[in-house]
Image (cartoon, rainbow, N blue to C red; front, top):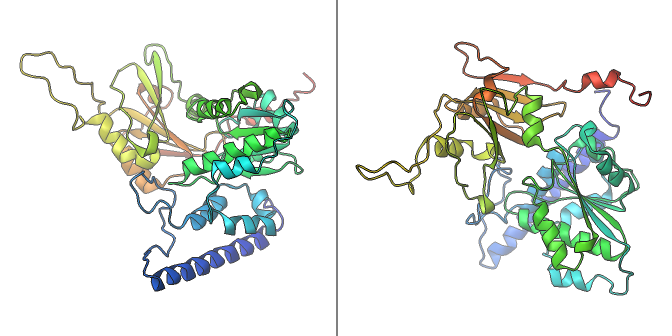
Length: 399
């Protein structure tokens, strides 16, 4: 309790008041809709606010302010929550009442601002531990005029931001990812045209499922391509397995690594990789649909037609359900967790142990090279992170 930031109790009360106000206002809104002949049956906040919402899901736009509040409580660092202000509360209450169009945003940007001074920095914040930042990204954090951060940027990294620096955290929740992405991009353009250095802070590496390429293209299309700098970050796709004692490439075990997404654009299922005995596969953004992913890896899809009699089979090799795998959550953070199991048990393990996003799934024989399975044990859970403790005793300044 002593390690908790001051004023956290009062912040909890304030957030509770915000929640009550949202419920009351939404309830009144639904009553008005009912009186006017409109109908909307979404009043309560569902327990699955962080689940996948597909393009066809008609409920994606409902309860958006309550989802945003839930995401704030889940992802904001405790220090940031403890320092929440009346202005923050107003922003939460007004979230998504209106949709800002690109035309309105562009009209609000003064055209007489000096061009050539502002710039945009896309930087990866690494997997979680602040010591894993590059020096370039750390310099950008200390010198930026405005920081636009993804909600999964680790708390330890957010704590490095100077208190004087304005910060906007992406208002991303299931069903609103594209709108939140556009909002940050528009804010970045507005900042650059005002002559500011805007830091677009992303988790991991900007180009490894970080939509960094899309953002660079967006800024180019708006005539700002020459003012964009991209800084690499340590991706969890490779550092996560390392902190879980999994060597993705190991002689005589695995000679290749494949990085995949478990969820395609708009929630669609990506093409599953075929089984190769010497391959390690790392799936990002996959745990929320782990049942479907395991099914796609171990069973043929309906679209995969069997080969005709007498013809060589062209169907992909399926993954044996006994293949070792590991779930790695919040890699390099103090609450890192690793679940070691096999493909036939991983769904049951996650259902029983729960999920702590962000996480990834590693599949392949390399998972067992340094972590021999225990006989009769379906899965093993390892909590906590101590991978960099030895560094605390080293005086780097003396070196």
